[in-house]
Image (cartoon, rainbow, N blue to C red; front, side, top):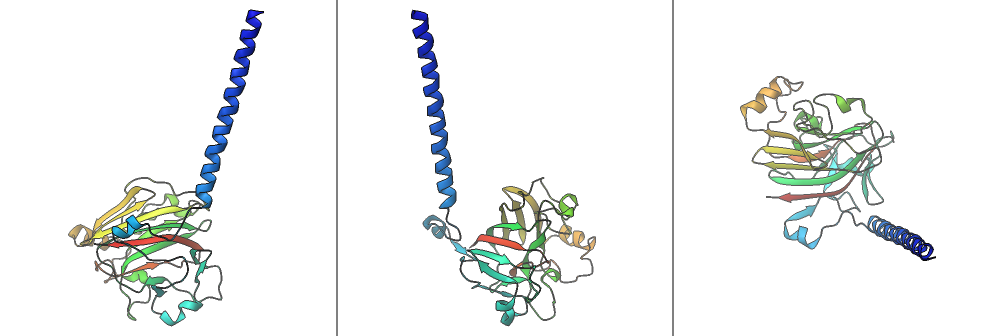
Length: 256
């Protein structure tokens, strides 16, 4: 009889323990769901403001941006604000085509933003863009940070992988883009012509735009005949419209 009660006690303790674990898991999951549901985007904390961060996109308007070489056509372009997201509605052929550029030029800064591309999508972010009627496109002057959906055919192509400096520099460290429909985080740092690209926390490109090595790389690339490409260390930031829908959020910049 004593053995019976002992065994029964063990079974009861085991069942209580399992139920406690399940309740704990439920509480953790409810907490995660609450955080995800109530996560705030396109806003700066007081600490970020103290550090000098400023929003490039406020989640409500396209203020601070315009269509490259077509500022009066911005409102008719593929770029729009949708549910707090900066959205490139590239699939709508009735909209004015073009890249979106900042009103201001930037030289020494740290830029951070989240992005995702449509399935098999291809896009980019250009830095040091020179806006002038003599240049018909942002890529003629601005080096490109490659944005790529993981299902795109260039995912495993040298010089075209996500996070690389497109067409010039290979991806420094291997990094995977998150699945279609999931957000990726990019960081671009530029100081005195020296740049670093990061994708999801990993360094993917590093160059010195003032060096002879950079000039040699350009000379052996597809940009060898683009005499103004990669020369500037100050310019506008551009988001590419390359025929694929693209989404951006939490775009912030810190100048130093």
